[in-house]
Amino acid sequence: MQIPEVEISERALLSSAKTALIIVDMQNDFVHEDGALSVPAAAATVAPIAGLLERARSAGAKVIFTQDWHSPDDPEFSIWPRHAVAESWGAEIVEELAPLAGETLIRKLRYDAFYGTPLAHLLHTWGIENTVIVGTVANICVLHTAGSAALRWYRVILPRDGVSALSDFDMHAALRQVSFLYQGMITTTEGVVFS
Ligand code: ZN
Image (cartoon, rainbow, N blue to C red):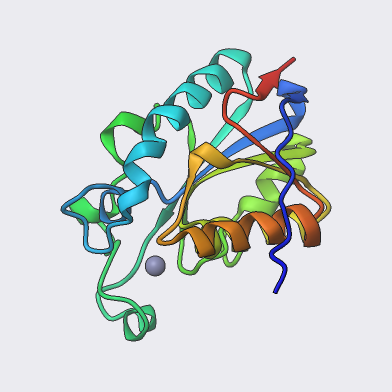
């Protein structure tokens, strides 16, 4: 079986007024080694995401943090171990990427950050055209959110060093879906340049 290659673009030049950086589920339960559903590869993405976040903030681009947010008896716990329970330490965004006052936090019930949340409304009212999506897990919440953005005709830019998965297979599958099916651009965090 031939595994398709995924093209990595060197640079994505984006208008800061029309771009939202969406940081998906960088919460203690997924990113911290003591988290309930720790993704070992996520730790290495914190620094690249922090760099991109700083540049997005100084360029004046919109920044959105998604936060998996479950009740203690959420049906998702029939699929996964208990994680991201509302108000718990595990549900908090990791301190290195803590949102600033006034930045948007989207609390979500499922993998897709658009589902049951005001995200579509906010992107629309802000006049956003481009979504730069980083975070975890590549083929789960990142992919569902990227797909949902693309279905609404937002352009999706995925910096691969800002995304983590539980396996190389899952990572590659997510990049392939974004680049092929959703016609998104795969680049790096350094490759994202705000104008
Ligand atoms: Zn969850």
